Structures are given as structure tokens and as C-alpha cells.
Length: 183
Image (cartoon, rainbow, N blue to C red; front, side, top):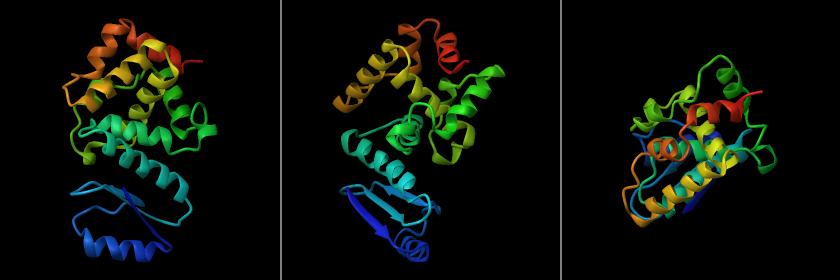
């Protein structure tokens, strides 16, 4: 991948407007076109978060020809915080716990239906992060299924929907994710 770091926000914005005029503005950006992926960022207050997020996209797309949108964003949201904060201190964690307490479980099947980044709002990013967190820190079967799913994507085969695979491995999936984020 190529990494473009700008000292100032204004220079970053000018560059992107000139060379990528159709790309919507973001604080940092991953673009995969011909050749290696490119990450663009500037040295702002959230520089480290932005770079970890966008570089996660770059690494995923270097290894995988296709990554489902929700999983791509969920992994980027997970890895954007520093390592010592990933398990319990991600800003999404308390939001997911509150949603689960009020009976709102993260909606994996709805996430899987999303095809455009414009469809990803605050709740979708939160839920994508929640499923990644569950698969990385929840039951061993969920982690195994994620590993197999990614390996099949890497091999170029069609692994199907991850929600179907998780529901086969963990028949009480809704209860398990509720317990994972419960009190």
C-alpha cells in the first residue's frame, strides 16, 4: 500500500479535491483502484485513530479480493483504537451494552444486506463493531467461524453468509451475543 501523510488538513483537502474529486470528504481515506491501495491522512487530533482505521482497510484489501462492507468496517472500527482499549474501552462498547439492555441486539443479517458505504450510519458502524468484538472475544466457535470465513474469502471461494454459518455453529446466537454484552 501507499501511505500519503499530509501535515495540514487544508493541503490534504486540496490534494483529494484535485486527484479524487468524486470521493466524499473523510478525515482519512483508503482508496483501492489499480495497483496497491492508498491511504490518505493528515496530522489532526484523531490522526492515530484515522490511520489505524484506514490501514486496516488497506491490509484487508491487500489480502482479500472482496470483503463484505459490514465486516470491512467492523474490523476497521475494532482496530482503530489502541490495543489496550480494544476489549472494553472502545466508544462503541457502552453503546452496544445500552442497546442490548433495552432489547436491541446488533443486526447481523441487516448488515449483510448493505452494499454501499452511504448505507452505513452510526448504528451500522456500532453493530458491525459489536459482531467483530463478539467473534474475537466471545465463544470459541464464533472465532473459529470468522477464521474459516476469512480463509475461504482469501481462497476465492464463496463462503456464504456469515450469519448463516454462525447460527449453525451457535444455535442460540441471539442469546449468546446478548450475554456477551450483558451486565
